[in-house]
Length: 118
Image (cartoon, rainbow, N blue to C red; front, side):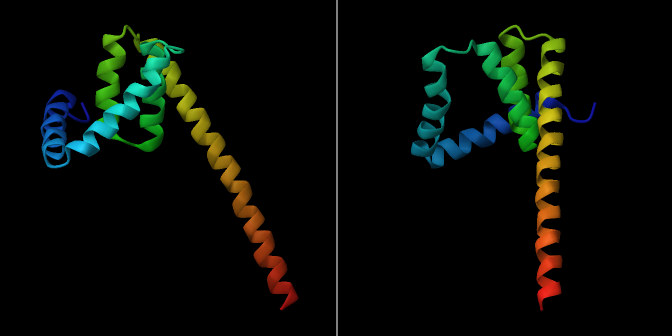
């Protein structure tokens, strides 16, 4: 196993608790953001957690991964559903790299054309 995820989650919860005690308004604001989308009930909790896992991978956030994996499983997500959500994250990240590669080539063209004018 790459990481003891259960131990990590406990450590993370302790440290987040420390932040919450030092800055309770920040934690209230954070919770309000998380609860706001859930109040619309347009997406069920399992789908919300699968989306959160895809974003967690994209943001490379271990704390998000362990938190939303736990929540996704509690909301009934299967390994196969989680793998499919991760597949979406992989595809979107590859697509984003492709889009930004086009931007690099645009910058190369602009710089090359600028050098020719000088």
